[in-house]
Length: 311
Length: 248
Image 1 (cartoon, rainbow over the protein chains, first blue to last red):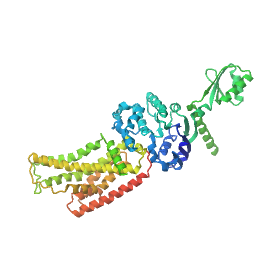
Image 2: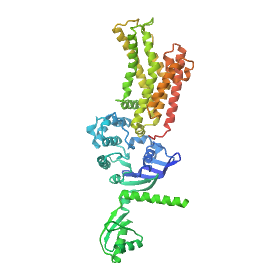
Image 3: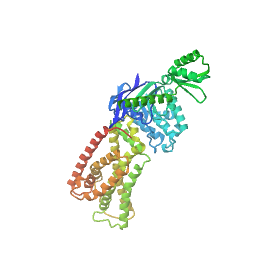
Image 4: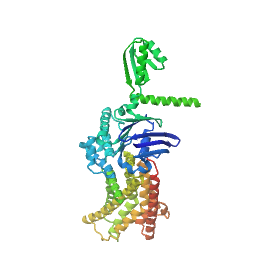
């Protein structure tokens, strides 16, 4: 069961295609990371999801219903932050949260509950303009949490925060699934931040969703093997001949990239068979950032190859 | 539906807490009455003609409807919508279970309510200033022939087009200066056009024609024009705006 479903969604502004047949599904209960560079189409996707923009083509389903039917009623069940949080700076935290509370017909005591979750209860009557950026972001998250929505949509939740603010918000986001039980959709370009909190990932590049998987599958699929051995050039020639991508690092170690765990034992076997002794071999999984770069670069290469072929 | 609208109006008023809207609603009529008061005191009370306090009353209302009222309309519509432009509130509102046309209607109603409150305050301050003048020794025949409620109703209906236009312009334009400048320019133009036969082509003259013109048929023409034009622009704008996407 998916809470959000994009099927071949395209969005164009004039001649410019911002989203190109984007398809992905967000499972119920997941913490879904929607990753992409600046300008990749993340915010447009979020705005389409919430009905702020209308798709040029394709279908969006929310809570198993077409968004055209589900919205704006289901917005009662969605908490969100888009880009920088929109806060009425002259209001107090309590007054600001009361806007959403009254708009969504939520009991008044829910304000204290959400302020408690984001650890802002002592600042309930503080004026927002006097808050730090991190506190404002916490308040925006509290606003999104009002009414305990089933879906939280957070667009770049750590944008503009200092390192401490980022850590605080990351810890808060990490604790949210347990505290709220909501499905969380987080869009971000800060991969290392997202990697620590998400269970599922989709990668968007230049308006195209190029990959969707669980984080576990994505980062454990590939890695690099670092081998310390004496006959370095022999080993390199041997493995290159077997179609492995080999290089050496400054410490005189052999690096074999783009391999799976099963290929590690093949390499070990090959080296032993040719009597190349190695005293250390370490397999490192690719980080989300490395995987992301690899996927994006691969797509760029395919596109430039296609362009050359057409030319 | 009605309770939802009342709730939304209350929310809009919460948003305007600690903003300049409330201060301006108090200051604009107060400054007009203050000016009229000072003019009379400076003149040694020579304002009193055969009609007594009615002259004073008419002077204050002329100042209000010809000068301050259209300026206040431009100011308040700019403030009511400017709060969203300034704080990225459109995005915030768009993510709540409320349709764009509802936001438009509610904000329009709030602007109208502010104009209504300012006008009521104008009448109250004028009455209070008369009492004050009597207390400090200025005497005249007390003859309030101007019907308070009828006067107010006429103005509020006839002013519908300028409230709506101010609302639409400040909704669409982020910069608060532009709708304000337009309000000033149209006020100056209206003060001249109101006396000509072309006043029907300038919506900024309708409230003047409805309240200050002694000819009753012109009063009703201005009110009818105001009601038809104001409501038409309002409904059309709400319908068109509802189809727009939210970019900011």
